[in-house]
Amino acid sequence: MHRIWNTLLIAGIIGIAASQPTTGKAHSLTGEQIKNLISNRTVSLSTPFGLSLPLFYNSNGTVSGDISGFSLASAFAPKEQGRWWIDGNTMCQQWPTWYKGRRFCFRISKISDNKIQWQRDDGATGTAVVQR
Image (cartoon, rainbow, N blue to C red; front, side, top):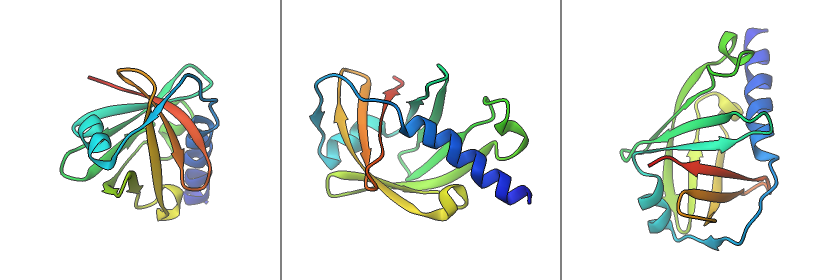
């Protein structure tokens, strides 16, 4: 039962981040540009609650997620480490248990110096801020 709540909570929080409208004029990034932009940086996904979901993209191909800052999430699934990689002009990532271990790939466009727009291969879109 704990695992079911864990999965539902993570999907809900990340799904909320994915439902954010995108604005501004963006230009698509190449795989190499994506890698240079997010390697060794925290990317904070926007949510409608005014909170951000931080993901740290290590240059060694690991990505760390921490939702412990969300009050409901801290009791269920606060942290997880997955992996990320570049495939052509997309960034792909996979988590051990979040999203039931499903792999997703994202097209990334730059809106401004540190703001990006993303589109996941299942059609979900959103924005994020790359921390410098």
